[in-house]
Length: 152
Image (cartoon, rainbow, N blue to C red):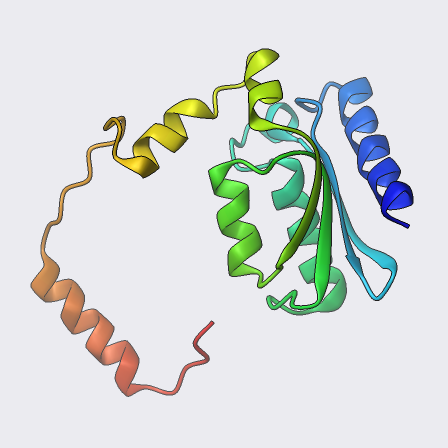
């Protein structure tokens, strides 16, 4: 089963490569032994840096299952998820990920994950984060909290 799903992720990546959509990143989301979401890197196709294979597969699975909560799903992907994709996986409540290539392999073909890990670890500051107007934003949060909302 694992091999079949990894092969499906690889096929997604191959489709994206052959169409010039982006890098060699393909992914499938599986629930209860069946594929519920598919995606491959579409960064170049959509001119959108967030269109990684995992992001596309999560979006597809969420649409197909009509939910933002993908608890019980498993991801199969051609490469270890970058920080953005890992964050999306966590927000989707997915706890199991199978991947093919490591981050070091991704770096080896020219993709730049390392600066993101450096930023997250505090090793370097690529993006300057500055707190501004916290008081008004806390008021906004308070107003939201007073209402009836689904917290996800």
